[in-house]
Amino acid sequence: MRRAASQPLLRDFHEGDEDEEEEHNFRIKGNKAFRDIDSISKQITCITLHKRPPRRSYEDFSSPENYGSWRQEQRSGAARLKKQLKATWAIQKLIDKQLSRLQTHYNRAMGPTKMSDVAHLLMPKWAQAQELAALFWLGDWRPSTILELLRSLAHNLWDPVGVERALSHLINDIRIEEAVIDEEMTEIQSNCVLHLPFRNDQNAPGIRSEFKKIHRVIVKAQNLRMKALEVAVKQVLSQNDAAEFLVAFVRIQDIIHEVSIKNNTRKSGTYIKEFGV
Image (cartoon, rainbow, N blue to C red):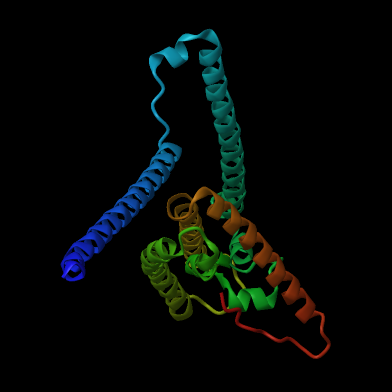
């Protein structure tokens, strides 16, 4: 009977031990969880402090040493900015000089000219037959061809999508102006064919008048060429992209001229190729 009576007490004792063990385990797990949370909190605090350092109080700058160090940092940063600005100004100066050279070249048609000069402006002696056939328009590169060349290089520029969009509008506008000049030149040519005598007489009535009209058309073409270049360089391209384009433009002109000369020296005859630019 005593043994039987002791069993509930033993069971209660074991149940009490189990409760104490569960409570002990819960405390251990709870302490571990708190330690994990505390560790995470410390990591977050460290990250936050690393990304956003606390603001320095006025007392940090109150000493001459700290203020002097801060001023030195400011001077170093300003010096680096000034150096970069000087480089930027130097590049812009070179771009302006290159545009000025092109302007001088195109301005050859502006001054007084003889009738023979008009023919030389239309077909320069230095240009090869391949260049004249493939690229030239009233004495030099067609303006829209220059812009198409730039568009073919746009994928290498800083903002190809923006440059492509701006060039599309510019090329469309330039082609409209080219069409107006072409129409004016066609009218002059028709008038020459229908009304002027077919003989080598520069003093024939109307010849000088028609040559003056042709000269005015050439001047308009030269102005349009310069306009296309200036708008592209100054309004469409960034400074670095403008410099790279001007370098590429000169190089491509040289390559085409050299290839034309080599083709002219071949004994097998002349081979004219349309340059896809």
